[in-house]
Image (cartoon, rainbow, N blue to C red):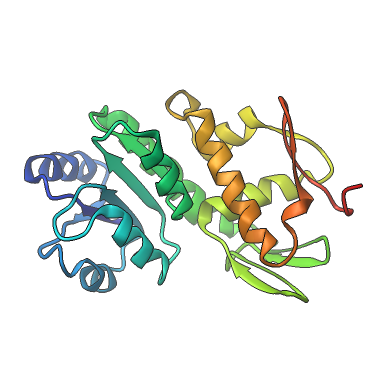
Length: 229
């Protein structure tokens, strides 16, 4: 049974989400002390974290940064604020998805199913290592390494890279990427994919690989094997 840590201070909403998720056999944990979120995160060791942005003591962005400093566990943000910057910020901090309040519970549950299935199932493939542009991609450890160093990617980042590299030198459409990343693309804005790809490219630039992910305007993205001309 998957463990979900729900960092939400609205008791009514917390209880409703917990009840809904319990029907899917998820174990849902809450926070008893919002000044000690990391202590409870370390103790629970959740498989997925859902964070509200507006929280007592520190906001959800603060705790996302803290979690990302220790773990690549999937993170979903919840927000009642209607600011596109909140979504951009959450993706830049390494969140896997963003849900706007008020939301339909079926949408939240679908997103949880999709993320858990993607994160914890695709690594069962026989081949974990892939060579690309002189670098080794370890799909099991989410690490990309070459002679310039190594970087650890989030689950979303390595999944995007995997989709592109498996079809290297071929354009992968935006619709295909969105549908593979988020099962129901009706609930995903086009900007969400852009933010995720840009974040991946920025991480790859740390080991001088960012330029090998090209944007094809109006079409999608391509992972090239050779240095772009």
